[in-house]
Image (tube, rainbow, N blue to C red; front, side):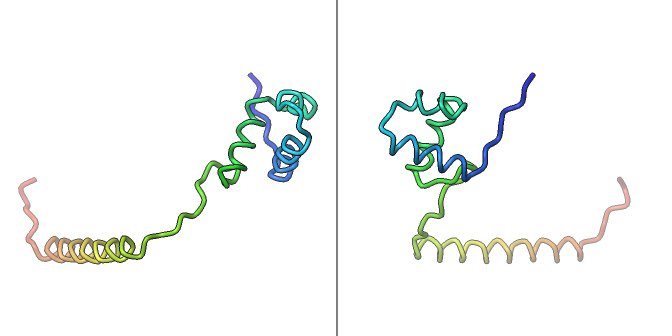
Length: 97
């Protein structure tokens, strides 16, 4: 069983640039580079979506109101956790396990 080859980000960027600038079919470019057509299609799609090759989404702008609401909710949950920790420490433990 062979493992999947890994390519550097520079190679991927060069392959995408070649595919877009040459005007040739992607299958032909992929064959010339010795890579699979599927890989080249994925790299081109990721380049157009503004994503890096690691599959992570790019940073999205955050709505200020939503961010503020999430901060408020975080503080509430932190207070609840502190309360539960304190109540657990102060409650007597049962010996009848």
